[in-house]
Image (tube, rainbow, N blue to C red; front, side):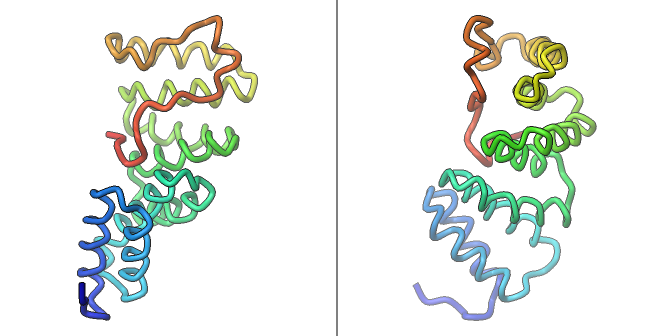
Length: 170
């Protein structure tokens, strides 16, 4: 498909189409081309966000951190912090995950997934009372969600539980 070599909006839209079709490598390529062609500031955070979650979906969590951080710098919305927190947890950077999840909870105090994930970050840092409180709060906020049920006998071996794909946070 021929494209206008200097229209960032063309690359942005095609990158999003690739992303929706789960062609994350092509999505990253086009989204990065969009950035090289200086897109309007109002879409830059979304471009960085989609690059980050495309890397996450490729299980390249280290590569996802920088674009997600740039998205947060441009527009500090909870979803961006939440996606970066998931990367930090998977990279066992639990202190950084706690900071990001605290930012999510400050803006979305009813976000059960944020409390649940923060529970795992607390557990990894051996803050067991805080972890237990967060796990209970997650269940309180979403009592019918089976993904938030913790098997107390297996919790010590569990480092993380995937609740949704990258890019599917509310």
